[in-house]
Image (cartoon, rainbow, N blue to C red; front, side, top):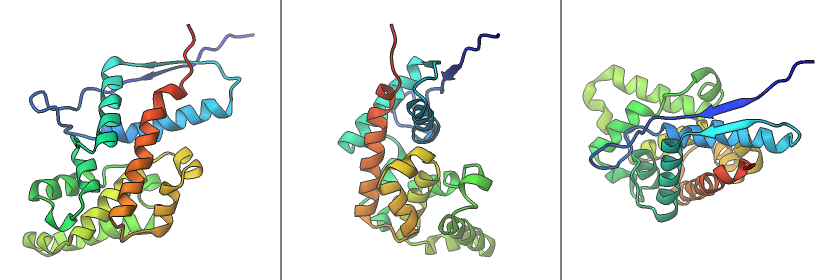
Length: 204
């Protein structure tokens, strides 16, 4: 009989700008609401499984940073700032460009193609870009609000889609996400982030 040890090593580099402390890339947030959350879900569903899970300190620091952002609304991540913006029509050009560059970075076969509203956002952008560089100015704030929301929704794990409320409700709604929709999603993600590490049992 062989002994088998399960070891999950959770690590991310520091995505915060060294001068400003602002997040340059949102990967800690996105992997937390998808992979790290789903891993906790698997362990909760199978309490007999014994494993070792290691979170490196810089990852824990960034998770704590996101917990603070989602609790206070003092945004240091452009994705959260855009999703929470009360008036998407007044988004800065910098935030719009950042989102258009980021918001389809996912594994398309499983995270984009299955969702028709998300595909439409991608196809609309491709169509506009094929016409003229200046046509991007015709994209309304509602496009960016829906795009930020779908980028977050696409990165949620199966546990959130099954056990939470805002995530499946907004996926079913599909689009035209108003401020209340986006606030409910951010509140739910804030709860997920706050409870993430305590879901992993500690054994001395």
